[in-house]
Image 1 (tube, rainbow, N blue to C red):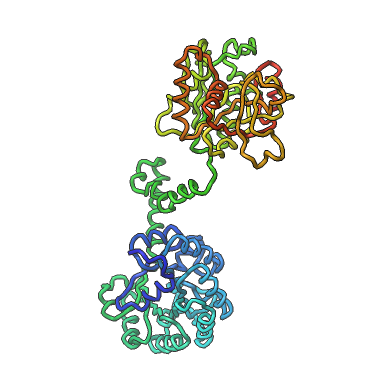
Image 2 (cartoon, rainbow, N blue to C red):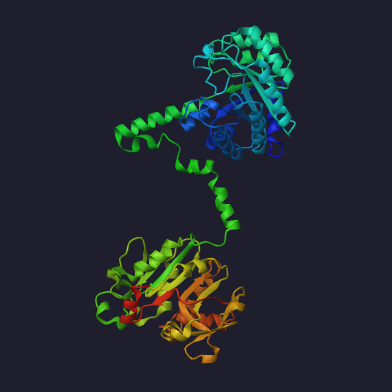
Length: 544
């Protein structure tokens, strides 16, 4: 049974405490176990001091500081909507510490705290309990009063844990202390016993009656039928440490098996699948939030690298391999390109190869062969790559196999939501040789301070623009959005149906889009890329 999120945890816990039937809450010690407890149907959580300290790997002797416990509680609170009752040991100090504790618990939406009448630092009740001294009763009453005065939510509860039976003081002392704590403002009494039978707690309840709710922890008297607790009118039963103990036993078995057998086959079908961990972590919610709030990232983007041509301008360097495999500082150009894409999260990369295609063999890439590379152009290679893609369309970045670039280029392309986006280098006067990629560009406005926050679009592209109209040079990059991939594929198909376009390149595609008045978004840069078009470029690339 899940809680109602708009009802505060403190209100939910108060309803459990005052319920006319016995209620059950279960131990948890971190966010994951707390969520598991809630999913099991429990209406409340016991944040056990023993379990929290154990999962930290320290003793239940206040060795974990109260602020470390508080931080752990925050994760538990964030992971759940049901109320949490903290096992607050002795309140972590005097009345002043108690007041600060209550304020901090309320800030984290913790519903209640249970404190025990022993001395700080505490020792677990089941370790030589009879030798443990108890707190001064009046000092403990002052601590309860201080906690109640500090709370701002009237439903926040303080449970006073009476340790008289644990410490060997008997029923009379237990009743005396319980009454004093009740008068001091405690919302409930937790009566504790280390016996394997419930005699002490039943005797207490019979004498106590219904003065205020009584909570029990049947860890030692676990064989007692639950109906006995119902018949005696207890308020809440705490299953106090069993989530931790279960996990410890399971981890010990798994660790031993792995050490002995040195493989995973014997344990894989006995442990939770990784997908269940992701589910408990609510990974799907993050994916949805990323789609809603983050700018478009590159993880769902693919890249197409056109690398079918030889690059004969490099002479002997491309006699036995295409230009894309020429080494720059000992690494092929294609490898540098792949690294730049990978650096921004683009891992789905299709490479179109043709000349000496068997030499283009880097790992983790998808290859599409254009065996007609000698008689066709870039659009033929691009169409083959687009048609090779299986599954739903993706944002697609298209570039050349002989152009190096800074990761800033694909990163910026991926963050643009428009259907077609290109990069233009405004430093064209010093880079006129780059015009071979398809030409000079005229844009809606030149690269300037005014262009910094403006949306700029391509007006013209070509080699014959008058100099006064040139705003830069197209750098060989085109990003096509998911929604435009099919359209672009169809347009290329239409163009290639005309034999005159058999050797057409991407510049002709851009010109066709402009002719159809299809907007092409322009991003300006100055540098951050290098076209390998000569031996001198190969040398310069060593310092790129």
